[in-house]
Image (cartoon, rainbow, N blue to C red; front, side, top):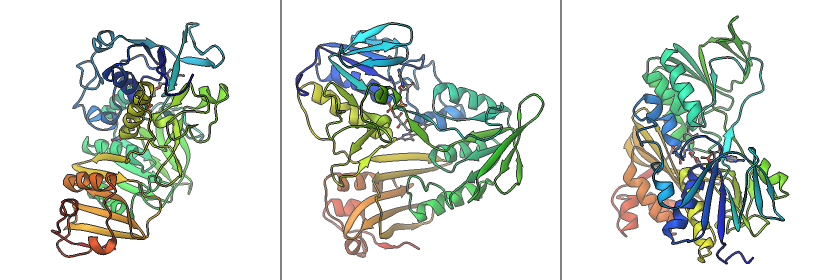
Length: 424
Ligand SMILES: Cc1cc2nc3c(=O)[nH]c(=O)nc-3n(C[C@H](O)[C@H](O)[C@H](O)COP(=O)(O)OP(=O)(O)OC[C@H]3O[C@@H](n4cnc5c(N)ncnc54)[C@H](O)[C@@H]3O)c2cc1C
């Protein structure tokens, strides 16, 4: 089958953000064939970002249609067959997926949207009650219940999820310590030093302890196997009744690897998000794709990426193939602060800061004469302008950004209104 021909049926493995969006986009584009959406979590497809934000604070709930991507009635109305189950094997010869319960589905085209799972740490005490990870609705429900009773929380890993949880835990009155092996927060996602400093200040101002350059050695519990303390690599112990391990994710690639598809930190796909089998695509958190702009192979973990990938595959399957070249963007909420990132920093040599309010600024990251990414802290208008600018490939040099009167919005409109100063 040529990859541009419309298949008679599409089976999607993984009913998360990317899987749901593929099914919905196929129908929006008028795809008339059979769509089967198979998910291992026994729920309707839902959004994950609120799990570490509104849901954890008790401001959003499942069951009242706030967190579901669509109500239960949507799927039969759109003739999307939503199946609860785990796909155990792919038979590429017969084009069939086999589920753990023995059922099977034939596909014309298969979309792997298997996402990722939380990474755990192999340390003594990792299985104690009170030790959590946060990826699924089930994880979030357990964490929310534990937080309601917790007095002292330790967060291992100062990435976005760890820090979002730390903020909610602190606001709920918990004593919070964040332990990070590297020397600053958000290092894995390559945030600039300026944004990292601001985020550190934000948490310290709220009374949270942040310990950098510290590894986890062990978790200790009492006779009832409940967590009582977190031991660090230097031998010190932090009393704790709750620990969140927020040390990143592992892409779910085993199914693809066992089917003989290429895998390397994600399921390997080309610029059309096709695997080395023209009848199988891979999208979202589980897919490692080539970035058209840089040629680098990327695996991103964001809603934008999951939705963008899904739409591209739906377009390809309905006869509109193209290469994936969408601008990555991301957001995180911590306390009353929103951090938004447009673009991808693949190594910058110049940082310029827009705005003189220490709690509301944007950091412009340049490599040579080229703008790579913009991090905006409480500056949503900058974020939107940066997205448009980067997306449209409108050039911006450090000299231009340093001109008195410069603003991103003004530059976009061909004007100048504020000024950017070197970070430091
Ligand atoms: C707590 C939290 C907060 C986040 N906050 C943000 C944010 O603020 N902004 C942002 O942009 N992104 C955020 N993200 C990331 C974003 O949610 C993910 O990038 C996005 O959900 C990825 O979608 P996906 O469909 O690729 O994978 P997932 O959402 O992981 O979905 C994959 C699904 O596939 C299922 N599956 C796997 N294997 C099988 C199998 N063999 N058979 C059947 N089903 C299978 C899994 O059970 C899962 O339900 C957050 C993530 C988390 C966990």
